[in-house]
Amino acid sequence: MSKRGRTLLIDNIGELSTQHLPDGDGQAVLGAGGSEAGVMRDAAVVLDGERIAWVGPSSSAPEADERFDSAGRAVLPGWVDSHSHLVFAGDRTAEFEARMAGEAYAAGGIGVTMGATRAASDDELRRLLAARVAEAVAGGTTYLETKTGYGLDVANELRSAALAAEFVDEVTYLGAHLVPAGADADEYTALVCGDMLAAVRPHVRWADVFCETGAFSEEQSRRVLLACREAGLGVRVHGNQLGPGPGVRLAVELGAASVDHVNFLDDADVEALAGSWARWTGPASADSAAMAGTVATVLPACDLSTRAPLAPARRLIDAGVQIAIASNCNPGTSYTSSVGFCVTTAVLQMGLSVQEAVRAATFGGALALRRHVGNDVDGQRAVGSIAVGHRADLHMLNAPSATHLAYRPGMPLTHAVWRAGQRVV
Image 1 (cartoon, rainbow, N blue to C red):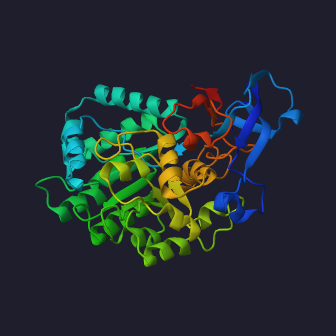
Image 2 (cartoon, rainbow, N blue to C red):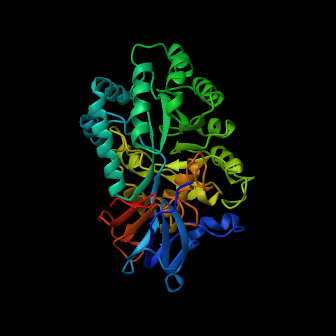
Image 3 (cartoon, helix red, strand yellow):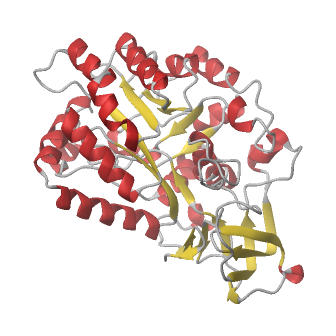
């Protein structure tokens, strides 16, 4: 538990999107159908060190050591980016240009980044990581996951995991990103499940696998996920990005916290995802994390860059599936860390309401990382929503409401950012 710090009152908030409702509201907390669940007007928040100490009307706000006048601006939870690939060197501009000229995306471009990343020094990778994290924070991201996956041998996957752990909140092991050129697929899968996993284990909380044609088969993906789960890691899946496939159903079968991309879904995939949430009674329940199903994480910037069909976010929400929106920042298919851009795209092109998109990029990301509840889970407070006891991660817009994220697309609307109670923007 953190010691008490100087308290800060942030008042005169025009619109506060808490993404939080009292106990017992269950599914209603999602704001389905564009309702404004979890939205307060003329509100205030008190920060005490790294935690939120009070939330309520400005007129009832308690005194604090310091005061920040929001001047009617909107405040959201900080973005929770639950899917990124920030540990890399090099550039894939040529691949992007070829794709814009009509070539289809294929997984093999990962090998280009692997070569550049292996060749980079630790200091160079640190410099690049620091710059990318700073860009994300400048756009309102306060909680960040990133993956390994551009090392693809024991030494370089270990290096990637250790470096990532210096800069981000959550690290995911993605040794199963691509079979390196010249390697036998089954032998490489055994390495991912064996020596490579043992090496990275102290630095990571999650494991992932690219279950797609051209990457890892269903059988190989299952081997990786089972080995990583046996090692105590949470699991997630890259699935159904390039076409129909087994990724979604494999993720649900193995209890993965999320399956990400989900561009190509059939009725059985949607039913499987919805079924995984059948026992969940909402974020306020005591067993919320244990009963949570598999989050469908949509990656709008990637869909645009690859000219893929947009993931069916509207259909998933309507079916009762919990979704997250993330940046997928990577050098090949989504070279942006702007979660705000992804939220805008989800509203303008994917059929979500503003509040549904904001929720997916805050609470949804926290849910995908199982950081949506608790005041001291693994030594960390809940993120992705604004409530007493949660981590003080706030994103203030230079606008009176979150609607401006979609109403004024592309505009730099971030006015201030607090991360764990410290103002960082």
